[in-house]
Every structure is written in C-alpha cells, then in structure tokens.
Amino acid sequence: MKLSLRSLIIAGALFNAICFLFVALLNLLLPPFGGKYLEMLTTFYVGYHPETGPLSMVIGTLYALIAGALEGALFGLLYNAFVEKS
Image 1 (spheres, helix red, strand yellow):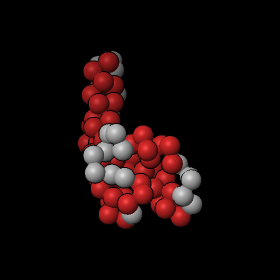
Image 2: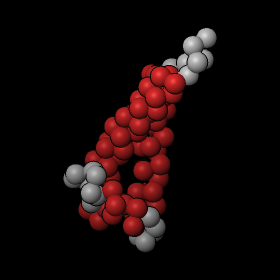
Image 3: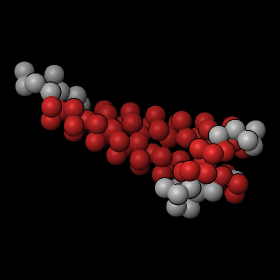
Image 4: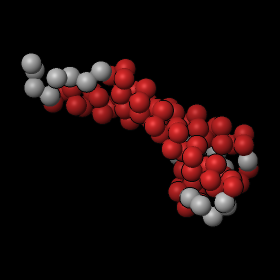
C-alpha cells in the first residue's frame, strides 16, 4: 500500500513547524529552554536568531514549515519506491 505524498508533505510541514514554534515560544518565556537546539538551527535557518524576538520566530517557523515539507516528501518518495506493488 502506497502512502499519499500530499498528506505526508502537509503532516511533516505542520509537525515540524508546530514543534519549532513550541520550543521557540518556551525559549521566549523561559530563556534557557531549548537554547542549544535553537542555536544549532541558526546555522540552517538564515535570518533566524533566538534572541531577536517575535519576527525572528516567524521567520524560523516558515523555515521549519519548508523543511518539514521536504522531509515529508523525501520520506514519502522513499517509502513508495520500496513498498511492494499491490
């Protein structure tokens, strides 16, 4: 049984963006929370810096949305390529 590529792209994008937003909001409220993780993401998400505030959080969330969509698409393509044909 093959997986729906569209569904995986949407699910991956939303999951990644919500997780990033959750960690970024907690970092905004409780500054040491997730600091190392968010510092690591600054190397991948150009324009995102955890200490600059809400606008940077929106930019990071958009990057996470795109990254999650790519991850979902890659997973779906690989899964569908190796699944048995029914």
